[in-house]
Length: 137
Image 1 (tube, one colour):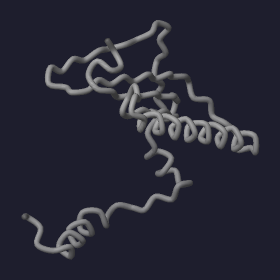
Image 2 (cartoon, helix red, strand yellow):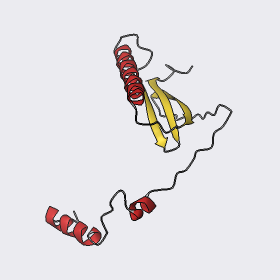
Image 3 (cartoon, helix red, strand yellow):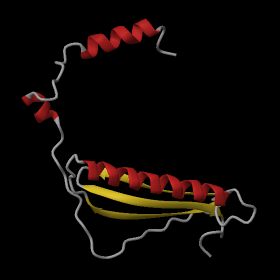
Image 4 (cartoon, one colour):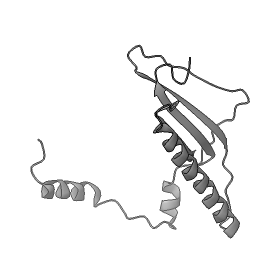
């Protein structure tokens, strides 16, 4: 309701940000503008948490396996490993989807995949959702 036209928004953005210098990715200013690398401290014990919602009609479970991220060189073998990992995740997700469509499916949604939560950490996550009492007794 506060904005009358797209031109008004465009002009507002121009006036707000046009004085900011454009950063060349190789410039010193761009290097300094990047956030510093932060590490997530490892833990040796298994961690878990539970949440209960009296109004929930389903239950969900999430399993995340974290490990330190190792910078990989840009090589053919690195690309091949990346493709294999993603093909595996896609095939697994297609299989989980097919199972979820069966009449006797133990869950109505499940998926798996890799993620990079931060620069120093990578994780593999599995999630599933089922009707109340379907995953956990």
